[in-house]
Amino acid sequence: MRECAFYLVSTPLHLFLSSAIALQHSDKKNILIFIDQAEVEDNFYLQQINLWESSPFEEVHIFPGRIKGLLKKRSSRQKTFKQLAQLIAEFKPTDIHIGNDRRIEFQYCMHRSQQYGGAKGHYIDEGTYTYIGREQSQSFQDAIVDNWVKKLVYGMWWKNPITIGGSDWISSIYVAFPKLIHPLLKQKEVVAIDPEWLESPSLNEFSKQLLSAKGMNSDTVSAVDVLIALPHESIIAQNQMYKSSILNLIIQLKEKNKNVAVKYHPRDSQVDALNLQEAGCQLIPSQVNFEALLLIFPKNRTIIGDFSSVLLNARWLRPDLKVIAALENKASISKLFSSLYSSLEIDMVNVEDIHTLKNL
Image 1 (cartoon, rainbow, N blue to C red):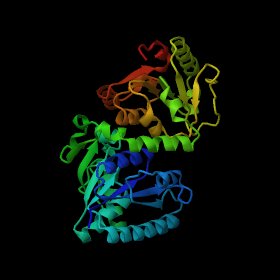
Image 2: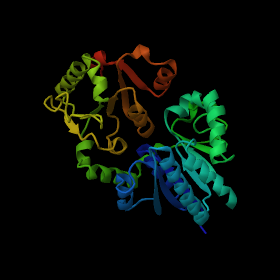
Image 3: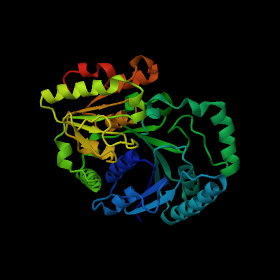
Image 4: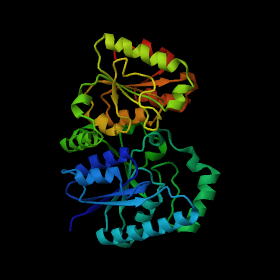
């Protein structure tokens, strides 16, 4: 009987990273489990995984989350626990992967697996917390109050992580930048995520499939020199210099015959609030998956964005790209984040100075 590995996923980033890792372990029976999903019946990523011909996952399951109301949430969680227990009993996984070991579904699976010899827990790079830690995990509220409430409600099997990825359930961590991880994670077995894992033909196929499903031609993306990922419209509205600065940059890039694409925030109310298409920019539909864009983006090109997970994801998934953070006020960024961005070679510049950037 083949060994079985579970991959518990709640975000697109971890779907891609889990897929990359699973492709390296094709000898195992890999099972993908979507958790904490707002949409279950008509889930876009579930549909796309089922259409992915070279998917490394032999089975896919999905569970709801983000349910409002204490009683409804409790009832849903109990149902989820029951179904997860059935999956654990059926497949007896030897490995369980997660992007956040505070997830109750992950800890429950690890607990139930003890009946069958116990699975190894694996943390997959979440991003920020991997490198700067999560101080809140050691606060009185989390370490004492929340910890004991969860133990009383769910069972003594609940373990409060000292930081994300640091719980006793975790044996190894898959990380993009091993030398930069938080000291509390260095006691774990560290596995470097090889960029080549993300360049596999299978993941490339999946990325193109996702773009096509949103009406985007992958060849169009391949022709882009500079991709600008804009923050939410509310942030732009707070800075009168934002539009003029972005426009000045685009004009300069177009004068150098650069192909510029812009992706607005997916929750914006307007399609092209800054009229950037008139300035010669290619508009990428805001609902297009950013991770899919990154994986087929040409080598050694440029990503410009605000201070957000977008830039960190760009650096995790594509270390070859030039990544620039356009900030409202560079001086206001905390020393921890500033140090992390510098270590990851993410350039930081104030928005009003963005037009001064060279060699894009």
